[in-house]
Image 1 (cartoon, rainbow, N blue to C red):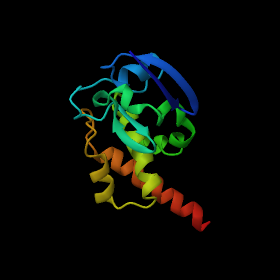
Image 2: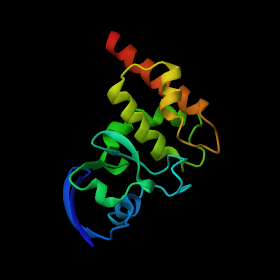
Image 3: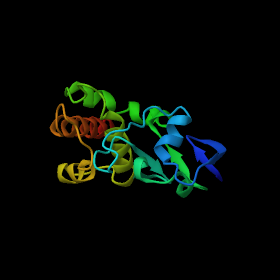
Image 4: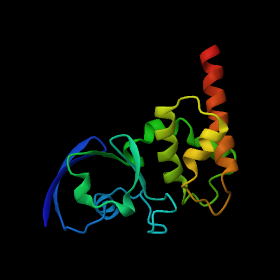
Length: 156
């Protein structure tokens, strides 16, 4: 057993975890249910969280590696996410909704580092997220519509 301390969604947490505990399990144990278990092979993006503002796959990261770091899940970023999730929904890109948290987490990370990405940059950044219902086009259109509306608001 290892004692760890980290900041989760703005709150300092100290806990004891087993040596082989995965971050996804730790987060779900701490009521972060937006973090989904999908492929468990680091291929689908459903478990994406931000560690020190960078997207990481929590299904392939030992909890001990998060010691001393800041972790954000969708539960801690609802206000920031609410700015653009409606644009994605308007495109029918959230049919079952299972992939949405991963897409949203990666979109937040993208827009923080590149506030005006090209379509190719968006596709590249979101390529690790699988969506079995609608593919990537609806998400791309939603993000593009959000960026266009943000640009229009600046001009007004």
